[in-house]
Length: 203
Image (cartoon, rainbow, N blue to C red):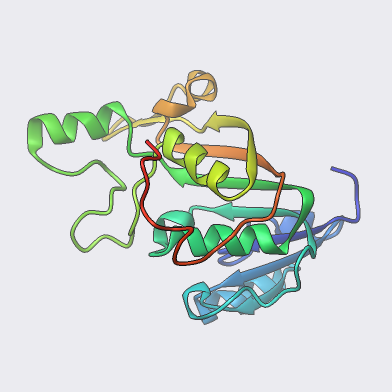
């Protein structure tokens, strides 16, 4: 990406991820945790405290060249509202980089089959996650909100005690990786209304 772009980090936390780019690009960030905002500012992020579930993102339409949303979508009760707002503040043709914990893993399947437990990172009892995602469902979400899926990369596979392993293979098998990074392009504006989010046979 050429220098001088305007980028938003949705769920920026302490700004560690995009902070290194602050000298090259104009980096903005929002996060629900006030304590993290000051740390993000120290990392060069123009960060503001914001709860997306309480109102729209505090930016004008089409402000950003690119948006990063890392490990955030699973924490939102209303996925459609999050994606609508991301689409709204992104320029036409802008890039979205989104990461999410994938529940379709060998460990997750084993947990259900042998232990009668939801997969790791699932929206289980007292979990901080409200939605479960696989690569297929993320593609459905992106299409529903005007994005063209470009590519996906898996971080690694994961097993207890072994922890992360076979990262190079996970790169090529993202639908089985425990964390997935997706790149998409905004093709058209999204809509958000009671009619647009009615459950349909999208699967």
